[in-house]
Length: 333
Image 1: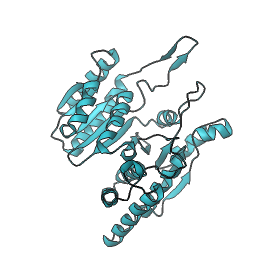
Image 2: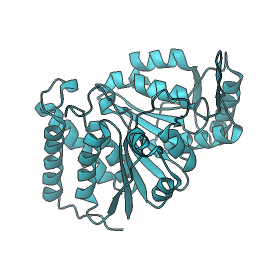
Image 3: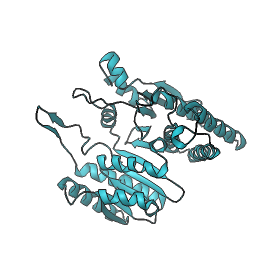
């Protein structure tokens, strides 16, 4: 098994090594290899993500990805958007879980306002929002599959802005057609009202499917429900490739200070384990995260005074003890 490890920029250098250590507990025989990507690389070499880098990512069974900085530079293309498009990682899965709620936001990941079709001149800048039937169908099918796997009693929610955007009429109607063809109960909701209601009544939601930017904003807003962006993991899934990353960015304001919260990244590693069919191992990781937080050992954003490594080490030691006590055998593939 080959796992590409991309620290990226900013706090990616601090949180990715901690998550990689957790993976190594469960997958000690995997081939871990580093791939340098991001703004720091661009400053050094003039290239943030080369064809060779993409080739390395495609050679892996999964990618553990940190965070990358995207400067407001017209000549700089987002590394993450490039990777998502090159690997066709069309489904972005963002779980938001608390004591009384378990939400999965299924975000279309390659179209919408992040399609990369843009133009800028002196007095006008234009970003083209692209929604296709094919893109909408496959993300709807992904959401319906997740809905069925979860056995949700709450209907699938199709987040949209079809009352204003014609492109969302296509997205909404395509999702409806897919849901009906698969006998999945659904309802539609305008994304602005939906975001507010999710924050007010998260227990009323299960699986939500929506477009690229709407899903990005909705899932970030849901960080409020869990203690901040430092808690939220995500998976980017395609037909051939899979990339796992924290929802948060590179956080240059705290980079290098040792206070970054590693939970989102460790949870992203746990999503990778689940992707490999290692559900028990993913559950152990989650239980240890909760146990350590309850103990009071956590980073300042969660009200503690531990640094990144101290927090992550406590989680690591808890997992190590659980592996030993439960006699879990390392996974080989």
